[in-house]
Amino acid sequence: MVNTTGLIKWLPVLLLIVNGAIAVEQVGKYWYRSHDAPVTKWGYWIQFLANIGILMGLATGQATTLFPFFATKGVSYAVIATIIGLLFSLLIERRVWLIAHDRDTYYQRIQAFVSSLN
Image (cartoon, rainbow, N blue to C red; front, side, top):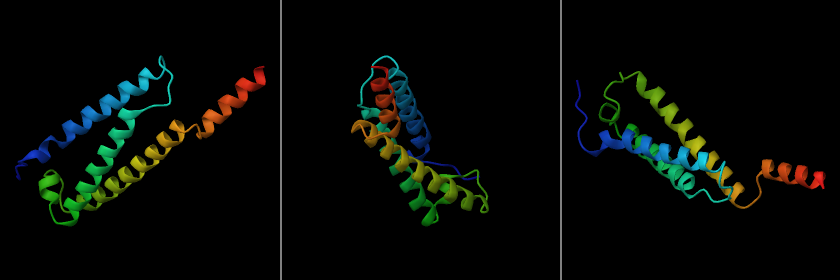
């Protein structure tokens, strides 16, 4: 059994804390309507960078250090999951940018609905 040492073992805890902070910010949007989402923006950049680091680790043969519970076959699944995570992080970053700049399609629909009420 490989023992994961160093700071890499704290990565899941860090990501859990970051995602918890994102959830708190998003729930807060129900009461405080604003276009700013700094925690979400930075949180998903942290997630993106973590996925890049994991991909680099997998590419350099550090799979057993990153995922000591995976067999050799599982590494390909880890690569696929990490790439999907990268794509989702970029997609969410794009949506956050659109919302911050009032270009989100849902925002435009809500504005059209509000103007139709008048």
